[in-house]
Every structure is written in C-alpha cells, then in structure tokens.
Length: 155
Length: 115
Image (cartoon, rainbow over all chains, first blue to last red; front, side, top):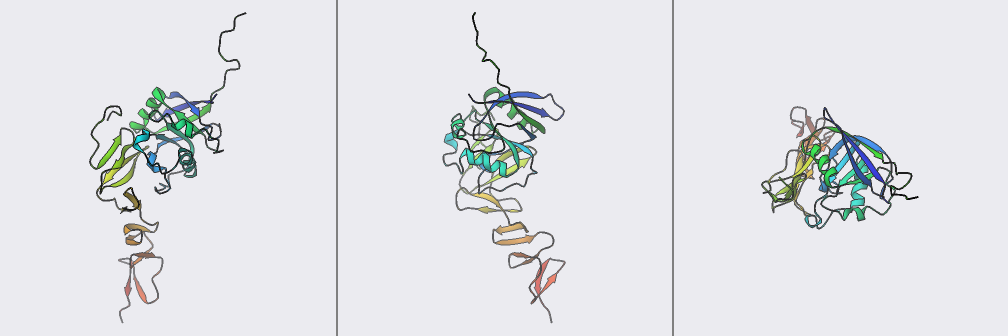
C-alpha cells in the first residue's frame, strides 16, 4: 500500500489548499517544504541548462501524454534524481496524463528528497496555482495511516 | 488552452499543452525554456535570446547557454561579448590579454600594440 502524502499549498495572500498525493518508492518517504516552482519536463535533461535556481524549492512537473515524448531524454527516476541535484527539496509529478509514470517510480533508488505523485482534481487545483503564476509555499507531510483499516467489524 | 480540446499552438510549436507550453518545435525553430515567476514553459523561437546560441545538432534544435564568462555568443566556441572583467580576443574571453597585445579598457578587447 503506497504511503499517502498531504500536500499543503500556501499561495501568497490566498487561501491554503490541502491536497493529497502518494509517495513514490523511488525516494524516501519523508516530509519536505519549499517554494513551489514549475519545471517543464524537458528541463530535466542532462543537455538542458541548469537554471541556477536558488536551492530549496519544491518542483512541480506536469507530465505530458507518453505519445508526445517518444524519446525521453532520461527516465523519470533519473529526472527526479536530477531535480534533487539541481536544488529541489521535493519533486511533485502530475501524472494525470501519464498514469504509467507511477510504475517507472516504483523501484527504490534511495533518493533523499521525496517524490510525490499527484493526479486528477488535486493536480488540477495545484496546476491552477501554477497557471496563475502565484508564488506559493508547499509543505509535504506523511499522512498517518489509520491504526485499524477502516472496514466494518460486526460483533 | 484546454488540454483536452486541441487548441492551436503558438507560432513555431509543433505540439504544446496548457501547462508546459511548447513541447516540440517545428523544423528550423529553436526550443527555449522560458521562466516567468514560478512558471517554466517551452517556447519555439527563430533565434535565441542574448546569452544563448542556437544549437542544431543533435536534435532537438535548442537554445543553449553561452559559456559562463560570455554574455553573447555565436556558438559555444565563439563569444561576441564577454562578461564584465573579461577581455574579448578572437572569440575568447580572457582575464588578461596576451603579453604581445594591449588591453583596451574601453572596448574590453585586446588590441595590437601601436609603436
């Protein structure tokens, strides 16, 4: 059972959002926080320029439909690794259009910065903040698993 | 642009999407990653902005940063304007001019010594 993540998005001067995602096991399950910063999927390639952004941000990458990127420059695991090397404290992948991405990020690689998958309505809300170019702070927390799985117990 | 409904892509884009902008460019255009605030989107340009040069090989054509000491360049090996503190000589940026040349602190170039 994948570990759920709570993603608090605190836009400047706007109501915070509380979203949910799933930690990918390619990386450690650990909290993280930082300034939200969007990265184009093609920016996470060895050939692409390192923008010298100030370290300490949380990357959000909206993945394109697989047929649009037939020859990806790097695997998603290596893109997540590269993002960390470039200063990301955490990487959020919006996998709404590429559900297969989850499989690419299953194999543990021990990345020290968390990698969280988000999709559907939660992703839409997050990308809405990005689309409006709103500066925002992001807090990623580990959602406590219920002590007892929530199913009905009849006595 | 609505991701589910195919909207016309901006000029030069072959494929694009609402959040990422251009994803692939038409032939002869250079792909450039533009950051405005927290957003980073792809754009397709006929020529690259200052500080970048257009690299055609290997695919895809992309705007690539000039060397660290260079402010504007023709390609990775030919600078046309150096950053502050460097002298321009034959497309290279030098901290000091060679001894047989004279530094011109106005144009920031190395000139022949006039006897």
